[in-house]
Image (cartoon, rainbow, N blue to C red; front, top):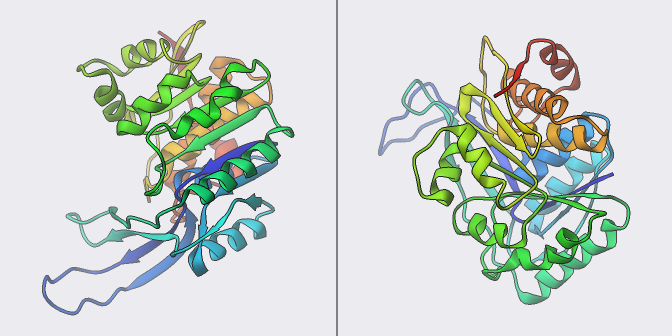
Amino acid sequence: MILTACPNPSVDKFLSLSSIKPGQVNRSTGEAAFPGGKGVHVALAVNELGVASHLAGFWGGPTGQWIKQMCSRQGIDSSGPAIDGWTRTCLTIRSGKELKDTEILEHGPTVTERDLHHFWEAVDQKAGQTNLICVSGSWPDGSPDQVYQSLGTYCEDPRFSVWIDASGDRLKQAIDIHPYGIHVNTTEARSLLGREDTADNYARALLDYCEVAAVTDGADGLYLASGDGVYHAYCPVEKVISTVGCGDCLLAGLLVGQHKGASLREMAVLGTACGAANCLRPDLGMLYRSDVDDLRKKVTCNKI
């Protein structure tokens, strides 16, 4: 089992419009809702790849319960506190070229110290059933600055591998606990390291803070680094329908690869195929195993 924590889940809603007229009534031509938040995407992708997944989060109001129900239908158990307020809704708008895949992210609810205690309690209760823990995404208001310190014991224990996907100040805080793995894109790496560089050099530099560093560079693919070197993996996608959640699906592939004892190169190939698979369907932040199986054959992966 892989344990994924999603501190700030969301209802991801797709909204299609033929055009947008500011200051006027605009009617959508199509909409759909999906369980979302970075950690939720990771858990769903892990499950689709055939590995048991447990999801810990903060769940607010009817929207939070809806996400849990949708995950349960996929066979994913969840835990964590029910909190005041409603879990956020995030919109992805498609309207012509100018607003294609424009995202509007709600702020989300505020958590209390009691909520945080129950959240970490949920993580602790499930940690004994796994050696892989992933904490992915933003944190709700009310979370302390050093919130990742609660994972310090797991990072120090060689039985566990803790992966973190974060950005901004949260990423700066996360590296203090030296997790096993870090997943960022080039923009996030540039902000953390404070310099302009290539994606492979970002990955190498991040090894000062972790054992495995995954840096994604958009269409240029994945740079995966460890003490064994750096691999660049790339997968062409002829028709991209949506890129929302590609990084989350890629991270799920890395986790599943590690869970199955794959080499660094094999992890890079699987992760890249998963990220590419997410582009092929309109389902936001989700993938299909059949697509992953097809795309793995198309991945180019080289050590650099």
